[in-house]
Image (tube, rainbow, N blue to C red; front, side):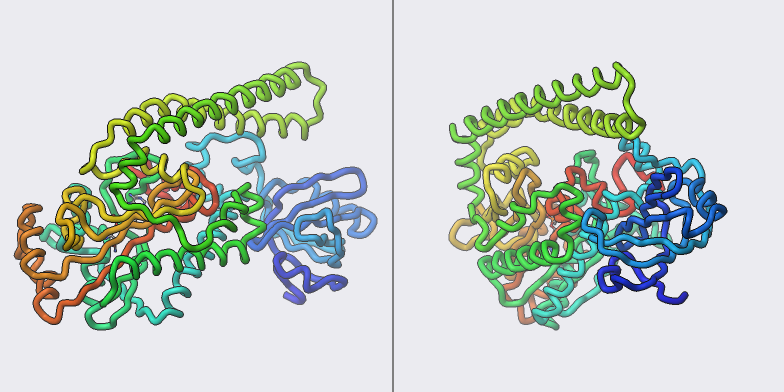
Amino acid sequence: MKNTTAIGQLQKHIGQNVTLRGWLYKNRPSGKVQFLVLRDGTGLCQCVIEKAIIGEDLFGQIKHLGQESSLAITGEVREEPRSPGGVELAVSGAEIYCESNDYPITPKEHGVDFLLKNRHLHLRSQKPWCIGRIRHTIIDAIRRFFNDDGFTLIDTPIFTTIAGEGEQTLFEVDYFGQPLHLAQTGQLYLESAAMSFGKVYCFGPTFRAEKSKTRRHLTEFWMVEPEVAYIDLDGLLELAENLIHSMVQRVLQDNRTELETLGADIAALEATQKPFYRLTYTEVVDILTSQRTQDFMAQQLAEFTAQKEAFETELAEIEAATAKGGLKKWQQEKNARRSLQLRSEIDELNTKIENNPKHAKLAAEFRWGKDLGGSDETIISLMHDKPVFVTHYPKEAKAFYMREDRENDKVVENFDLLACAGFGEIIGGSVREDEYDRMMARIDHEGYNPEGYEWYTDLRKYGSVPHGGFGLGVERTVAWITGERHIRQCIAYPRMMDKVYL
Ligand code: 4AD
């Protein structure tokens, strides 16, 4: 089609005649002019349609088009600072592809379950679109980071024979009569590849039969895992820090509009500068059990309560105005949207207010030796304004492959990276046990069958070297960067313990 362009490119075409192809996002018709907003996958554009220019017939046809009708619109690109993208289209013609009537997702209120059931359509809405674009940038930034740093991509198998992260979260499959399971991690294979290529990474879907319905858990999620020969714990922290920093910079550069639309905390992202905080697990236990944490929790509770009261007052005002009547349709819709938003914020605050004393108690009673729970991570993450590395966890709480600290055999040389603002763990990693005898002892201690691990323990026989790596969960990272509370919104088609809609 002649002069066809995308909305994202319009700035380059000011003063020219172009054709846009997309879907009707919304329309505000009046007697002689319509302000139609078109979306095309690259952005939104206001199209001004005048009856006197396009003729009565076409003007009438467009006026009756429903939300999400598909159409091509031709017109002159004009500068218009008040429009999204700073331009608008002065329309001279249009071609309708497919009319859409009664589109189920309207600008009014919808609950989460309804939207998940309609995920195939909901993906067209602004919020999933913005999150999808940011996810794309994050994945691209990750790949570039590793490719530019001399890493080789190794695709590890999905059907696997051995467990990496504990047998209780394996998804079993019947592989021609042989029981196998879906990959929980590509790490063990990467360790073998790192002995060939030096620096490697895998990037793919990962499966965990986690009986957990929290906002941080999916049963299928995407993980990028680098693995490096001849690296120590400090080297791993530096690699993770550089990766996160370059990814955040890319999103700030490429997706500012999407971040603004989502209401993400851009200042906090800008403040994500190196170095991040570094704490040992033992220091974290000291913090959790300190008076400082109890004071912090009390302060949080007071803030949640004040916020809840403010939202309840606003909700009551909106409901009173609506009950009084006489509002224009757009005001009613605006009020309905805000009421829904306020109700969901109040629900969220009620949960926080209910959980606060329980989490404060869990923190106060935390004893050295346990793995950090979700609420402990949340507290530490809220207490810091930049991501926090937590290192040297107790050996008993962690996976068999982690290298015992030679100066303190109670802990391993591992780390988790906690994102700030309460988002918690986004990366887990470690130096790997590289001595054959120690590795065999750990496998025995876990009760694993050593035969299945023969190829893996071979690596400790033939030219074993200090090595390590980590895994970064894509959806949790997207949630942190976009400010989205639930990771189910951070993948196009989420898989959760109790929900597989489509
Ligand atoms: O800490 P994890 O279990 O580490 C590993 O799998 C290592 N084998 C990685 C390695 O060293 N190569 O998981 C790593 C990350 C977590 O920090 C989290 O971001 C994400 O994977 N993750 C999940 N994301 C969504 N849903 C779940 N159920 C997740 N479990 C882990």
